[in-house]
Length: 423
Image 1: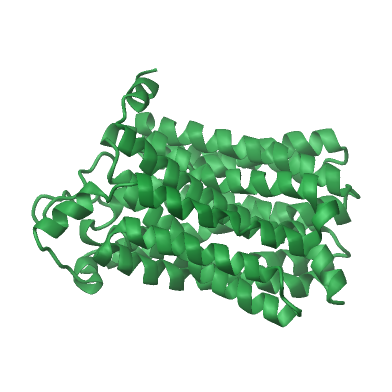
Image 2: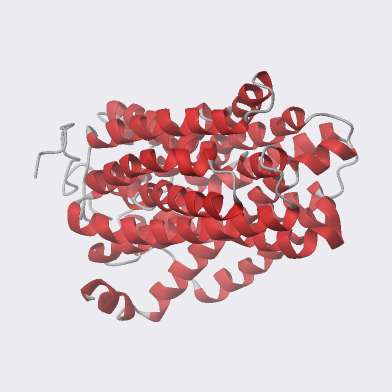
């Protein structure tokens, strides 16, 4: 109750920042997941295979580190607020343009460009928000921000469930222009990050290379960990609708209903474990969520009835996105202060790059086994759950660190790499 009471005591400006960043990631994820639901339809229209269309997903993910670096550097130089506005506008325009693609090649190019824009939003929005709220609320706010991702998936599920029969796959992409309206809200209601403004007042300019000096090991560990995290999320999400339709014979409405169900679980999981991490620590919360996903795999991948698939999917995403709910605050707290707009987003998206082949990999495994998507899903989920638990458990933590301190003087260094202590 104390955390909720503290949350209600936030200033109006802080609430606007949280709302804008949450909506930015929600609508970004909405635009991304539209493609996941219409892979089969695009393949039919362009006379190709689902595997060929998944290249669009692969390139979207692969292009995201470019956007994280470009927009992250802009956020550290010009501010989080204006950078976020440009970012949202750009990904909305590219999403809308995808609905007019005359061929698969053009669609793939547009999705790669969209990936650049998508790659910038998370890091900029997370740094803006977490630098604007009290340290004791970072865990809860982190879970809320990351809940924007399944919220976007949920929104895409609802649109697919309700509108796809009327507007088709091209109309689905055209609906994705709506996030552009968020720019008006940000411009009117959102203030710049206090930590960024303090550094501007000190006229402190520290380059990426200089800020990373002494933190190379930290960056490499974070990239590998985020590769595991991205395999964990995309490996349990991206081809799951295709699995439901092609292997379990679910209709469009049934697939949409199950997707709505598991995205509700994802939102609840992110909020729960994000807040829980404030009590038990970031690493412990991640490890617990990842390990608890393992016993859910048989129910999630091998059930045959719609009800049991929905229950399994709900539980799987509760734990997958529960682990993810800790990521925004964890990466921002271990980040060098001077490049907090750049570091979290870049390591996240470089990890994403390493995991970008996931959809094509899973589709290939399934096709090689006669369309056995259940095996491909279970194999990837089981391996990466263990990998995420190990990497996070033996990693670093800087819970409660103060943001906006003088670089190299008052900023506490992250803890040394140590395993989680028992008890």
